[in-house]
Amino acid sequence: MVVFRQKKIITVNSIGDDLQKARQALNLSIKAVEKKINISENYLKAMETNDWDDIPGEIYRKNFLKKYTEFLAIDFDGIKNRYEKAVKNLENNTDKLASKFGVGRKKFVVFPKIIRNVLIGILIIIIIGYIGRQILSLLSPPKFDILYPEEKFITNSVAIKILGFVNDEAWIGLNDNEISVGTDGYFTVDIDLNPGLNIIKFEARKRYGRSKIIYRRIIAE
Image (cartoon, rainbow, N blue to C red; front, top):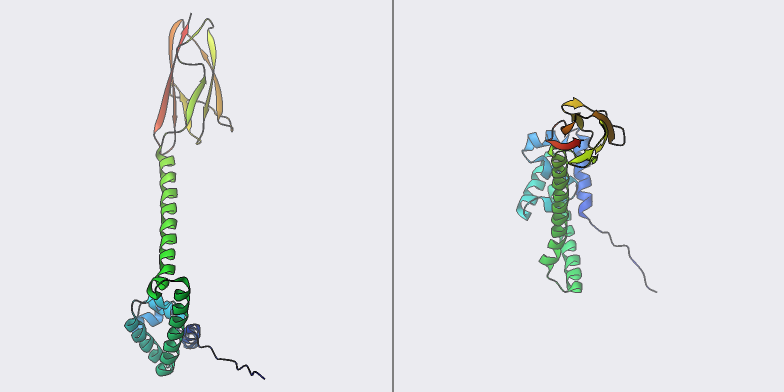
């Protein structure tokens, strides 16, 4: 008959929980502890959340852990032993996985950091690109065009209807007089023509961007 015995697994997670509970029992915030023992808030959070890789070097980890446990009146030797056993178990498991995939342990451990850094880099690039596009859109001239008539249009009428389009909620002016624009971005305006050459100036501008000017030269015969 085979007897299975339950093996007690010691994890680094329980250490972080113990530190956090002890601090909360003293009714202290992370910030308050930082001021009292001169350990960065980020490192204190790393110990409580078991993100040991955020603390640079094994010596710093143990020194910070010793200082924190003494402040919280926790048995440092017991915490230290649990930490070392957990780290040893983690290294053994990492060695097995590294051997399975045919890579060195150090390289295997570095992979998650590389992936995390790559993802952070991609996120930063996306954010910078988005901000850049928003600034460019804000400062660039509006999209604006006169659809009818075309340049150097010839007519025998004494008046003409202008059709245009603008987006970006820009201000539109005809010879410096404002034109009303529909909600769809299109606008029309009737203009009386003088015999001969008529030069008509249209201008569109956004609040913070550059303006765009279009001229239409219309000849009335």
